[in-house]
Amino acid sequence: GEHTFTVVTEAGAIQVVSQAEFAVKLLFIKAFGYSHEARERYEGGCLRELASTTDTQGEVTRVTASSEGNLLTVRNGDEFASLRGCYLGFSYWNPELLEQSRLINPQTGELVEVEIIPQGSTRFAGFPAKAYRLRAPELDIGLWYDEQDGRWLGLESTLEDGRILRYEPLAGQEGR
Picture: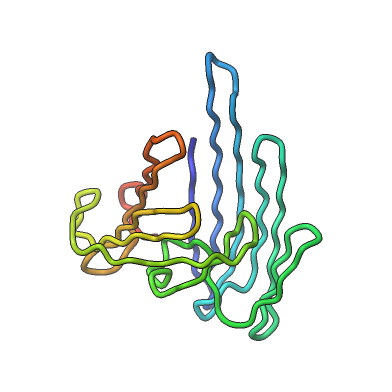
């Protein structure tokens, strides 16, 4: 599968489009399918708008969020939550994520308690890096950021079947 992030800054706002498409085939038959698209807009470091659609094996989830002042209203179907304050999604590309204790899951609209644990200096994808663990219920993700300028370098997570999911930006696109 493939997961792409496009991050564009214009007029003081950051627009992010995340698109994922994964399929698992057994003997040429699709055993599992997943697609996800999220469009996010950030202003002043805060999530201001979100629109996402996720299809997991034919079960479709749509999430929207919009802000008015310091209030962000997040909707998933008939459920909604009004949140006061400044929030981020699971925006790995944004080093400000490392300062957060709660993140909005763009796939479900849930506000997720997270713990960010510094892991020290290392190398990742050939770069000197600072490593972190992002832990939350059912999540344990390794994150790496360039030690000198803070650009996002990648992530790793262990899937349920024990395989490793690893994200690395395309050459020349690190942290953008």
